[in-house]
Image 1 (cartoon, rainbow, N blue to C red):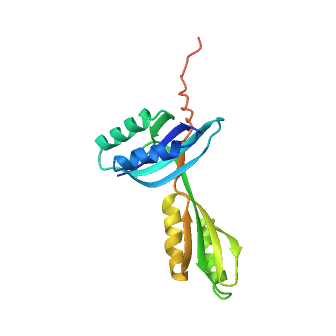
Image 2 (image 1 turned 120 degrees about the horizontal axis):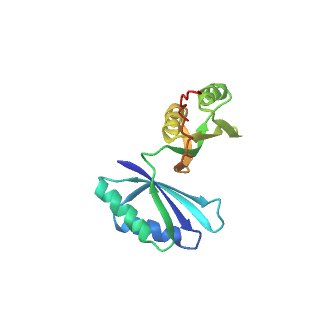
Image 3 (image 1 turned 90 degrees about the vertical axis):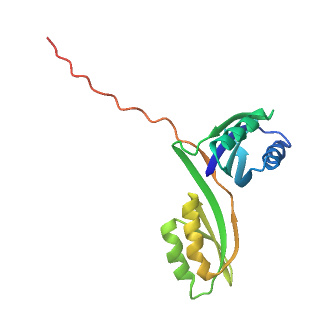
Length: 172
């Protein structure tokens, strides 16, 4: 089962290497990893997508991450209300004749052409991983020359206000 794990870490040299090394030693396969600075100076946020076979392995993973000295907080947000996005850049072979057709393919995905050359287009798309996958599959017949993806970045949604229940009161 794929799990999305987030970690707040100290923004120090070698932290990424130590964490990925620890995961590798314990035979966890990282499908994607995204790391960047956060709203707090000196703190970075990591998002891992990891294939984990069972809940015992998940518990082992979170415990091992929490043991790392530079790790401040670890969360498995897979089953929680979250926002997850990915960016992909796709270089597609194109000619003058099929450019309008490719534009028609990418438009429903809110993707955009960010570079045009004589024989190719570079397309940028952001969204949920399944949206990115769907666009890539539609572009394959045009000949994908290059493809790069950022990996998932995610965090939990904010707390939603609970509806206030009205209480009927009688005024005497």
